Length: 213
Image (tube, rainbow, N blue to C red; front, side, top):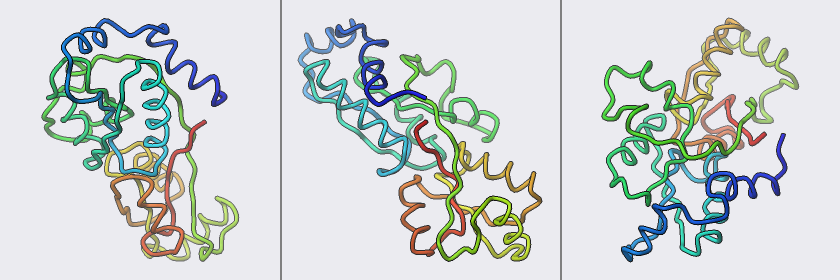
Protein backbone atom coordinates (compact mmCIF):
# COMPACT_ATOMS: atom_id res chain seq x y z
CA UNK A 1 0.00 0.00 0.00
CA UNK A 2 1.19 3.52 -0.78
CA UNK A 3 -0.45 6.81 0.11
CA UNK A 4 -1.37 9.36 -2.54
CA UNK A 5 1.06 11.87 -1.01
CA UNK A 6 3.94 9.42 -1.04
CA UNK A 7 3.03 8.26 -4.56
CA UNK A 8 3.14 11.76 -6.04
CA UNK A 9 6.36 12.50 -4.22
CA UNK A 10 8.02 9.33 -5.45
CA UNK A 11 6.83 9.97 -8.99
CA UNK A 12 8.78 13.20 -9.17
CA UNK A 13 11.58 12.48 -6.75
CA UNK A 14 12.75 8.92 -7.30
CA UNK A 15 13.08 9.12 -11.04
CA UNK A 16 14.30 12.68 -11.45
CA UNK A 17 15.86 13.59 -8.11
CA UNK A 18 14.09 16.99 -8.02
CA UNK A 19 16.05 18.20 -11.06
CA UNK A 20 15.21 18.03 -14.76
CA UNK A 21 17.02 15.10 -16.34
CA UNK A 22 19.65 15.74 -19.07
CA UNK A 23 17.17 14.99 -21.86
CA UNK A 24 14.70 17.51 -20.38
CA UNK A 25 17.37 20.24 -20.28
CA UNK A 26 18.43 19.34 -23.81
CA UNK A 27 14.85 19.56 -25.05
CA UNK A 28 14.45 22.96 -23.43
CA UNK A 29 17.61 24.25 -25.07
CA UNK A 30 16.28 23.09 -28.42
CA UNK A 31 13.09 25.07 -27.84
CA UNK A 32 10.77 22.24 -28.82
CA UNK A 33 7.41 23.62 -30.00
CA UNK A 34 5.35 20.75 -28.57
CA UNK A 35 4.84 19.75 -24.93
CA UNK A 36 5.99 16.46 -23.51
CA UNK A 37 3.52 13.65 -24.10
CA UNK A 38 2.59 10.78 -21.80
CA UNK A 39 1.09 8.02 -23.92
CA UNK A 40 -1.59 5.96 -22.15
CA UNK A 41 -2.46 2.60 -23.80
CA UNK A 42 -6.12 2.69 -22.73
CA UNK A 43 -9.16 4.93 -23.06
CA UNK A 44 -9.82 7.77 -20.65
CA UNK A 45 -11.51 6.96 -17.36
CA UNK A 46 -9.71 3.75 -16.40
CA UNK A 47 -7.12 3.23 -13.67
CA UNK A 48 -4.09 3.51 -15.97
CA UNK A 49 -5.42 6.77 -17.37
CA UNK A 50 -6.14 8.10 -13.87
CA UNK A 51 -2.64 7.32 -12.62
CA UNK A 52 -1.17 8.77 -15.81
CA UNK A 53 -2.93 12.08 -15.22
CA UNK A 54 -1.59 12.27 -11.67
CA UNK A 55 1.92 11.63 -13.00
CA UNK A 56 1.58 14.16 -15.83
CA UNK A 57 0.31 16.88 -13.48
CA UNK A 58 3.16 16.31 -11.04
CA UNK A 59 5.85 16.24 -13.71
CA UNK A 60 4.45 19.37 -15.36
CA UNK A 61 4.91 21.24 -12.09
CA UNK A 62 8.36 19.76 -11.49
CA UNK A 63 9.67 20.57 -14.97
CA UNK A 64 7.88 23.85 -15.42
CA UNK A 65 6.73 22.64 -18.83
CA UNK A 66 3.44 21.08 -19.81
CA UNK A 67 3.08 17.31 -20.18
CA UNK A 68 -0.07 16.22 -21.97
CA UNK A 69 -1.93 12.92 -21.82
CA UNK A 70 -2.46 11.19 -25.15
CA UNK A 71 -4.77 8.18 -25.00
CA UNK A 72 -3.96 5.57 -27.66
CA UNK A 73 -6.20 2.60 -26.79
CA UNK A 74 -6.47 -0.65 -28.71
CA UNK A 75 -4.61 -3.86 -29.35
CA UNK A 76 -4.14 -4.64 -25.67
CA UNK A 77 -1.61 -1.81 -25.44
CA UNK A 78 0.18 -2.57 -28.70
CA UNK A 79 -0.99 0.59 -30.50
CA UNK A 80 0.51 2.81 -27.82
CA UNK A 81 3.63 0.66 -27.57
CA UNK A 82 4.21 0.91 -31.31
CA UNK A 83 3.73 4.68 -31.28
CA UNK A 84 6.31 5.19 -28.56
CA UNK A 85 8.76 2.70 -30.07
CA UNK A 86 8.69 4.63 -33.37
CA UNK A 87 8.87 8.10 -31.78
CA UNK A 88 12.02 10.21 -31.83
CA UNK A 89 14.38 9.19 -28.99
CA UNK A 90 14.47 12.76 -27.65
CA UNK A 91 12.85 12.03 -24.30
CA UNK A 92 9.69 13.96 -25.11
CA UNK A 93 7.43 10.92 -25.52
CA UNK A 94 6.88 8.76 -22.44
CA UNK A 95 4.87 5.56 -22.23
CA UNK A 96 2.66 4.66 -19.29
CA UNK A 97 3.79 1.06 -19.67
CA UNK A 98 2.23 -2.04 -18.25
CA UNK A 99 2.02 -5.79 -18.53
CA UNK A 100 1.88 -5.76 -22.34
CA UNK A 101 5.65 -5.31 -22.42
CA UNK A 102 5.92 -8.71 -20.79
CA UNK A 103 3.00 -10.56 -22.38
CA UNK A 104 2.57 -9.34 -25.96
CA UNK A 105 5.55 -11.23 -27.33
CA UNK A 106 3.90 -14.47 -26.20
CA UNK A 107 0.39 -13.56 -27.34
CA UNK A 108 0.99 -12.22 -30.84
CA UNK A 109 2.77 -13.93 -33.71
CA UNK A 110 4.48 -10.74 -34.81
CA UNK A 111 4.94 -7.29 -33.33
CA UNK A 112 6.05 -4.07 -34.97
CA UNK A 113 8.31 -3.32 -32.01
CA UNK A 114 10.71 -5.09 -29.66
CA UNK A 115 9.19 -5.13 -26.15
CA UNK A 116 12.66 -5.17 -24.58
CA UNK A 117 15.09 -3.32 -26.81
CA UNK A 118 12.82 -0.52 -28.03
CA UNK A 119 12.11 0.90 -24.58
CA UNK A 120 14.15 2.33 -21.72
CA UNK A 121 12.53 1.95 -18.28
CA UNK A 122 12.45 5.13 -16.20
CA UNK A 123 10.62 4.48 -12.94
CA UNK A 124 8.27 2.07 -11.19
CA UNK A 125 5.04 3.98 -10.60
CA UNK A 126 2.51 1.73 -8.88
CA UNK A 127 1.05 -1.74 -8.57
CA UNK A 128 -2.54 -2.90 -8.97
CA UNK A 129 -4.96 -5.28 -7.36
CA UNK A 130 -7.57 -7.00 -9.49
CA UNK A 131 -11.29 -6.74 -8.87
CA UNK A 132 -14.37 -8.30 -10.42
CA UNK A 133 -17.38 -6.02 -10.86
CA UNK A 134 -20.92 -7.16 -11.70
CA UNK A 135 -24.09 -5.10 -12.30
CA UNK A 136 -26.89 -5.02 -9.75
CA UNK A 137 -28.97 -7.16 -12.09
CA UNK A 138 -26.71 -10.14 -11.38
CA UNK A 139 -28.03 -11.98 -8.28
CA UNK A 140 -24.62 -12.64 -6.75
CA UNK A 141 -23.12 -11.11 -3.62
CA UNK A 142 -19.85 -13.02 -3.62
CA UNK A 143 -17.45 -14.75 -5.98
CA UNK A 144 -18.82 -18.12 -4.88
CA UNK A 145 -22.36 -17.06 -5.71
CA UNK A 146 -21.26 -15.63 -9.05
CA UNK A 147 -19.57 -18.91 -10.02
CA UNK A 148 -22.75 -20.79 -9.22
CA UNK A 149 -24.83 -18.29 -11.20
CA UNK A 150 -22.45 -18.46 -14.18
CA UNK A 151 -22.61 -22.25 -14.22
CA UNK A 152 -26.41 -22.11 -14.21
CA UNK A 153 -26.24 -19.75 -17.20
CA UNK A 154 -23.51 -21.50 -19.16
CA UNK A 155 -22.50 -19.58 -22.28
CA UNK A 156 -24.96 -16.73 -21.60
CA UNK A 157 -22.77 -14.38 -19.56
CA UNK A 158 -20.12 -12.02 -20.85
CA UNK A 159 -16.81 -10.96 -19.35
CA UNK A 160 -15.49 -7.55 -20.30
CA UNK A 161 -11.87 -6.45 -20.15
CA UNK A 162 -9.78 -3.42 -21.19
CA UNK A 163 -8.63 -5.30 -24.28
CA UNK A 164 -7.33 -8.56 -25.72
CA UNK A 165 -4.06 -9.49 -24.08
CA UNK A 166 -4.41 -6.99 -21.25
CA UNK A 167 -3.66 -8.23 -17.75
CA UNK A 168 -7.35 -8.12 -16.70
CA UNK A 169 -8.18 -10.24 -19.77
CA UNK A 170 -5.53 -12.82 -18.89
CA UNK A 171 -6.63 -12.77 -15.26
CA UNK A 172 -10.22 -13.31 -16.37
CA UNK A 173 -9.30 -16.23 -18.59
CA UNK A 174 -7.44 -17.82 -15.69
CA UNK A 175 -10.46 -17.27 -13.45
CA UNK A 176 -12.76 -18.90 -16.02
CA UNK A 177 -10.40 -21.86 -16.38
CA UNK A 178 -9.99 -22.42 -12.65
CA UNK A 179 -13.72 -22.07 -11.95
CA UNK A 180 -14.80 -24.08 -15.01
CA UNK A 181 -16.91 -21.27 -16.46
CA UNK A 182 -18.14 -20.70 -20.01
CA UNK A 183 -18.31 -16.93 -20.52
CA UNK A 184 -17.90 -14.82 -23.66
CA UNK A 185 -15.01 -12.37 -23.57
CA UNK A 186 -15.90 -8.83 -24.69
CA UNK A 187 -12.79 -6.65 -25.20
CA UNK A 188 -13.05 -2.88 -24.81
CA UNK A 189 -10.54 -0.12 -25.47
CA UNK A 190 -10.17 0.52 -21.77
CA UNK A 191 -11.70 -0.12 -18.36
CA UNK A 192 -13.68 3.15 -18.49
CA UNK A 193 -15.84 2.20 -21.49
CA UNK A 194 -16.29 -1.30 -20.07
CA UNK A 195 -17.61 0.08 -16.78
CA UNK A 196 -19.91 2.47 -18.63
CA UNK A 197 -21.61 -0.53 -20.24
CA UNK A 198 -21.52 -2.68 -17.12
CA UNK A 199 -23.37 -0.29 -14.81
CA UNK A 200 -26.60 -0.15 -16.88
CA UNK A 201 -26.18 -3.81 -17.87
CA UNK A 202 -25.67 -3.11 -21.56
CA UNK A 203 -22.65 -5.16 -22.57
CA UNK A 204 -21.16 -7.16 -19.73
CA UNK A 205 -22.16 -9.45 -16.92
CA UNK A 206 -18.79 -9.00 -15.26
CA UNK A 207 -15.76 -6.76 -15.68
CA UNK A 208 -12.27 -7.81 -14.68
CA UNK A 209 -10.53 -4.57 -13.88
CA UNK A 210 -7.72 -3.03 -11.93
CA UNK A 211 -7.73 -0.57 -9.13
CA UNK A 212 -4.80 1.36 -7.71
CA UNK A 213 -3.42 -0.45 -4.70
